[in-house]
Length: 490
View 1: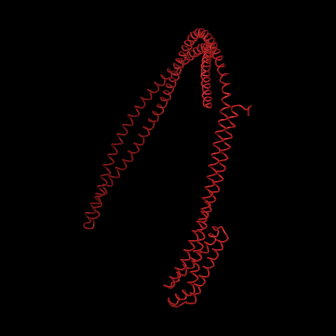
View 2 (view 1 turned 180 degrees about the horizontal axis):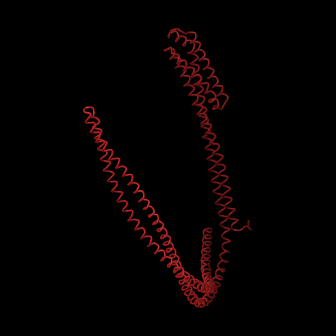
């Protein structure tokens, strides 16, 4: 163990403590398992006791059903008796699974056999006294079935007493196991604490001896590190001063190159904006030309529709002439019919009413046809006016298209001149960018040198600070070792 490192010794000490804790945990788990098993056994006994009490209740249900049958003579109480007996048979398996000893199973068997004998006796009494009065049936029951029922209840009581005794015995055993487990855990915990204290004291003594040697070596190393860091910081400051002077000159050159590049870029941007404006103007003129063409087509379409409207209005006028002629003829026929009806005397009165109505309808048709004629005349006049106006608009559109064609030629010439200017500005910008890139590369290299020098100076300062902290740490460790030694001596 003398050849072990500090970490190995501390690790061995912790490992010993962990092993002790694992041992305590294993013992605790084992004890807990034993106690849990004992508790499960107690619960099983209680469940068995509950089932036996339920069995007692079933037997009393059988007795109550029989007595109800004796009193009322109703068959439903016999059915209830059979149902209680069937439930006892169903509970037999569940109760048997909860019993732990052969004696308990034998006691259960005796109870079930006694119940079956009592049921058989009750059925025999019922069959043999069928039709007898209540008093005779009650007398047979008291003589033959009552002793068996009392025996059955006595067996159940003894069974319950045995289960309660077993429960008390199991609870006492559980308490004893729990007490033994607690005592063992307390003993192991005490032993683990004593061993952990011994290991910690042994490690403390060995670590203190090694710390004394480490503190001495740390103090000497801190002094050497502080001297070296001071020298490195001085050299880094000198190098940083030289590179700063060169960097200043390159920055002025870089600023000039960037101004030239910015001016060229502005020229390029302006020419690009002008080119975009020229393209937008050309597109706008093209859209105007397209609009003029569309307007011309629409004007021609309007003229055609107006001419067609005039033709349709002429046809409508001819139809109205026919309607007027029919209206006049209808009116004449109505007048003649009225005259004939008057001549017919009393027999023609109805026909007179119809003739008057036809004449009024003919008059309304004539009035409506004259109004339609006026509307058609107005529509013809409006159509003629529209045709003349659209012809004037068509002439104006043709003149506008000629002007647009001239403007388009001018925009194309402007766009060509702007494109030439943009190419020249791009070449100037590219040249200045190449020059700026070269200067920036040199400036970046010098900046890296300057940064390296500054980082070296910072590193030297950090090393000096670390040396100071290392010296302080060494002094603190020395005080700690001395205090620990004084504590052990006292």
